[in-house]
Image (cartoon, rainbow, N blue to C red; front, side, top):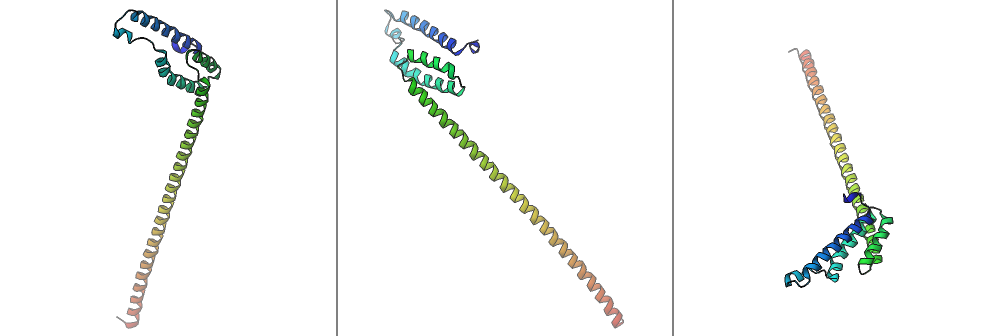
Length: 166
């Protein structure tokens, strides 16, 4: 239900709910006990708790690119808080830039690591294949030399038998 509302309508709905809560709390605290007096809305405490939420909302609004609605959001916020909207907007821009730079650096590092790993794997595979081929060639040469040696020995024995008459 809340997703179909515009940002301005959502802010108005939150304000209406807060006004209702304030009126209920004020009604409970008028002439109440010490426990009900703890429920009062202290504006300083309210600003202390809402300031991080407002800054987070500003950052998210910028990330989602709601610049048009953000100006109305900032106007609404500045009317209910102690100001500092410009500092919050500047800080949120800096945070966004830092986040983007960190993400880009992480992506570049990951890509470099992946490329290095792929190159190392390819080099290892090539070296293993080359070593295997060299070993096979050496084995073939050894087998050929042994076969030639056996043939030469057989031929020499036959020649010796023919010459010596055994």
